[in-house]
Image (cartoon, rainbow, N blue to C red; front, side):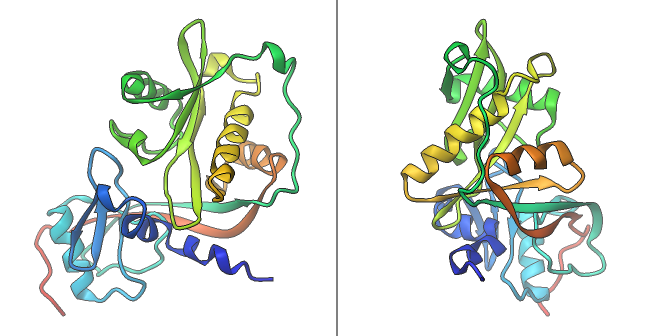
Length: 242
């Protein structure tokens, strides 16, 4: 059965920029992207013509990265490919159950992170590479963390926010703190917060990251569809309208 409520997830970046994250958006015509300090993701209409690609080039500037996330549209030939990564989009089904790791009563507390924690958040994501994370990425939604003797060792947060949904992202644990169930605790805590707002959790994972996929499946996430994350470099000269 097709989940009609999930159709907005076919364009999660555009839906977020036109909705919940409109205050963080930059626009030229029908092209949209985030404020650079927040995120790199871009969005175009579902049927972009040459004029839309020209608007995106104007928005980003010459020779800049156009992070198209999972947008399948093909850019003009003078847009240089930068990266392509196969991934999966997963949604929480509610059927899965994950066991607590060890003694939950003795587990470190989950804390909410904010602007004062940004230097540690940037350091942790630099060391663990969960995906793009910038100085104002935390403004996209709620970010939670776990500290060990005062040091941030794990975190996760909300990123894209299409209507009715919230993406769980930046799930990462410092190498010295792995194997203690921190990621599962953080994902569960975020999912509970999202559902308390009567929204549904979803996430993206690299197809090759089988360990992360297995964790998310134990937590009740199921694959909705395969996606390809792609990035291109804007041409050195701006395109004229077609």
